[in-house]
Length: 447
Image 1 (cartoon, rainbow, N blue to C red):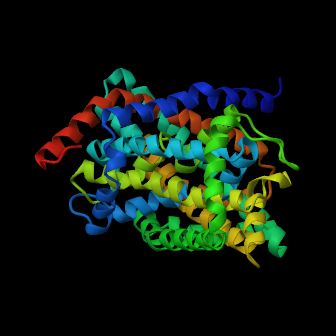
Image 2 (cartoon, rainbow, N blue to C red):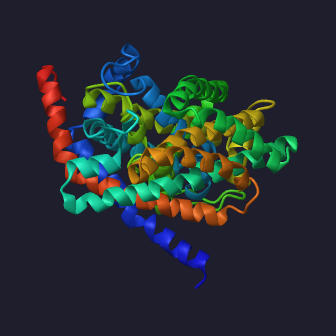
């Protein structure tokens, strides 16, 4: 068997039913253990987010900036191309399962951030570091410490695939198709723009993310709402189709091959996880840098990342695709989303082009911080600058190489990141439950 065949086999196992059950099962266990607190406290979480934007306590960036940094990494091409792929392979019902994944994923993201703040450290330069590698090392028995090193190793490498070269390649394809921009030109311009941000460290990343993420998310949502409002009479039927397809499957129409219930479940869950990253262990690295002394506060702010990414942004993409009835075309990915917006109003396809570029850029700057913190865990602060330089140099390479193998390797590394993190979440879940109960009991409010 060749190398690619071996990687495909490993990838099929890594993202097979066992992994999807582990991801969903962990989220469901945490949701039940928290007695649905995450879903019921969404309004409270928004009040915390906007009520104390500067933050109080130790940390490098504000709680708001920490959320924007994590969202900069999660709101990416998956929200445009990933949702479209899920619907093309799993039918409209895939969107329903993405919603379900997000509801339990909120508890996962909450627990990750609570533990990240609880067990974070300061490095030799005084910067705050946290995430799965730290709550494994500082929260679990030494027999589990090897999982911290495994997570950091996979985390430092995974970003070069799915958050770097894959993103630059997606931008070069979009700009090449829409404006005939040469791939290398796209890669070099992106490298310069990303370098200007990531070489400044977490504070500059957070500063850029804090204004760019809200702008691009709101702009994309407004364009999606224009389509939905202008086709308001089609919305009830679209929602019914999404829910019914989740439990009955989708019939073949035109170039759309149809989809079974299992396909809707499989692709909805998989793309939902890829989109919001709940359980992968990436987002808590950003939340560990927040200026706060209250882990519960940051946990509630963190769970909004899953809510915004999947229940808001991905829902807009999915609803526009279903309302415009473009699935029978048989195409997939960003092209399907582009077709839906293009049919909705003149020039709509450029919404997707601009969205792809902005979303990919923010993913690159957000994930650069994740990878750097993993490198700092492995090698100390001396690894920061070499990592940043390698990150920038890899960007133009992504526009020139065949990425199918890179996708496979990156997917596999992401799965290997998730496993140590999920083990730690399950083992530390009693602590999360106890901290949550004590917090709400002190405030005389039931969780």
